[in-house]
Length: 162
Image 1: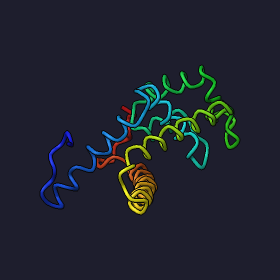
Image 2: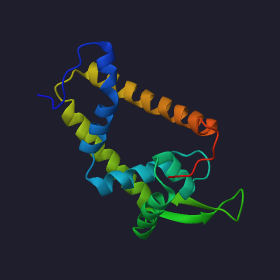
Image 3: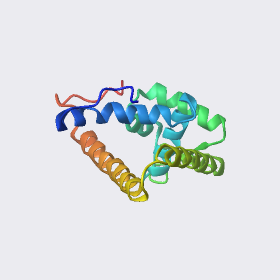
Image 4: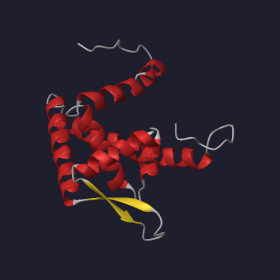
């Protein structure tokens, strides 16, 4: 039995998407620290350019001091390293270490194992379709997020990072 009421119509169904994604993220990670670390490692890995602490903050939707502490913990654990930007030597960028790549692999294996367990009662076609839709949703949400960042706040003010 689900811990949330079943929606009665399509609108109700769509209203459940955000909370469902939130529960999914909370329940399929190894804990708060693992969730945050996994997010940071994936943000750095997935960026096609050079990722900074400010970029991590923006991508995660947190204040820069929060991202800075999280990044510092990843550096202390040997998962990330700071490097000079190749485009602007005055800027510091983040790079995954071999240990960081290995940790991403470990997280991915745990997440796959959770996915397979959770969907064990599904048909192979249902599992594959859901996986395709989830990946597509993730890719489309990245595009949406980039567009939102370029547009800036609705009032035209500069973002504060808070």
